[in-house]
Image 1: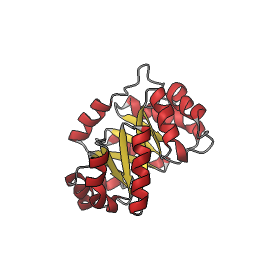
Image 2: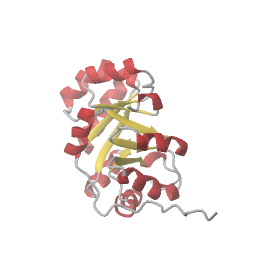
Image 3: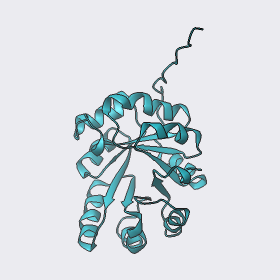
Length: 205
């Protein structure tokens, strides 16, 4: 019996890069699925999550992965800092924005946030917080870069810094890192996070 070839997903003709529409979706399902292993993607695609965050995927695999997400009506974000084989510079941002057509870019670097803003993709600046000094320097970076969204990691620190972050920069916040139980997700949302990002499949509704 002949095997029918699978047609790979094609790039979307129009890429939705509306922050407002993203948060409208998060109001209904406040979870972004974090994909570290390709075998988890089918479960994320079948879930109700409105956004999928790719980390650690090789650059040459990204196109079909991103397009599969967009074909399901979800938004695809790529953590440029962690993608093997992709420059962590303006050229890398331009490749993701123009050639792949991602909805958004995640980075810890202010210069890459600025480059992504110039290419009109949704910008997520990740803050890894460990102490008060780290919070001060991180907020200075956010004020300089002006991302669309801040992602605070690890989640356990968010209740301790939520008010300080909102007082200095009223940007929408996503919380990630070690969100593995429903009560952790709920605690972040109750303290003002708009969504949580997690690789824990059981938390993807």
